[in-house]
Image (cartoon, rainbow, N blue to C red; front, side, top):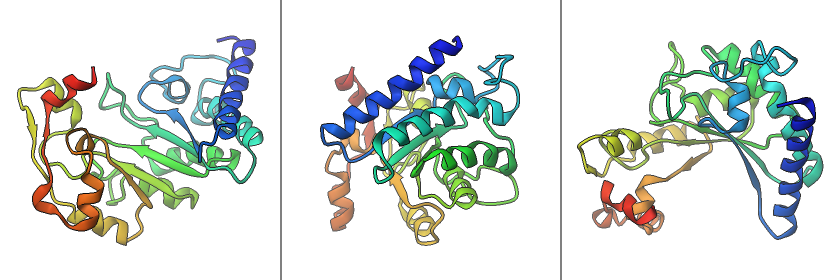
Length: 230
């Protein structure tokens, strides 16, 4: 992307966010995870630029920060702006944007300063620690480093392997899992919100059942359910 391409793209993000607010959306979320454009700049494995948008962690974060800043200016200070990001990529589970809390702060700090209201930290399993030496997951570390609310995600309410392992493997069912650890982590204020994906595909009433304690009515996730989404 040339400088002109980058400027046009930043403007497009701001225009899209403005449109979302004007038609009544309650918030916007920028998708900076899983190999999407913002993530391609953030990740050293994809970003080989030799200009101000490439190189060390702060330089690779610059494009995303400029997008956030433009969106914030477009929608105003009172409109929630969520930023979703991930360490792992669909083609590389071992990929890392940050190998330490210090490097993570070099990413999420400028994004928070640019106007992110909430960080959505995408992980494959919400209970796994992000760095050695502490039990905090990616959302937990992000909350600790920025002071901003965070959303965690990853195999919520399901046992067995994660989504892609099940999709590609021989197992067809993800059994129902306990929510005890999730509840404990939320009570300890490790993160503020939890996102649920796979459990809702087979059981769209999952939130109501959880809220009302209807545990016996919960449905497991079956790989075949994905066929209805294709």
